[in-house]
Length: 233
Image (cartoon, rainbow, N blue to C red; front, side):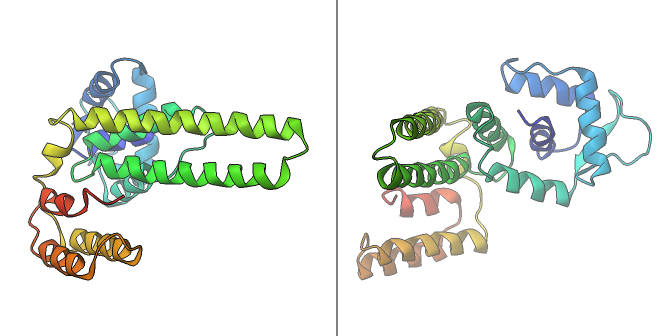
């Protein structure tokens, strides 16, 4: 569980006090990951030292000291959300931390975060499967070790699928809320790039591509863009 990045996610919603951050941290995780006050303030001091948060004063961290996320902190948080975890160390916990954090960060699509990690895990499974096919034919020990890794990766992917399903049925934190967010030119460009990729793969006709690109250019919110790509992988 990354305390630093979870605190950054909470601060992305706006300035907060140390005590408030601790309470929201535990409330957001169902108190599964209890946090001591000392852990919160130690993490905040480190974040402030690294320039990822600021408090407006130089006093010691305390319950009434207000913290704000910096631009560097927002960039660090965005990168962490989309960086595959270190799988040898409790991948489910790390994935859960990232998805829970994505729910709190304004303008962040938790579905996109889930898809980034699902894609990474699928590539890793394909790599292990290729190794198993090419090198493990006559070595039972190697096959068993690779099978263990494949089962572990599959369990994480299943958790991501379950998280995706729960988000779909929780409109207050999922797709319905995100669909109202206004899009930027960069968001439109990303959607168009995805449409062009699907056209190159033969999933769209030229007429469909042209029609959807026109709609993407005129999109006002994420719901408009999502409807253009919902039937694409």
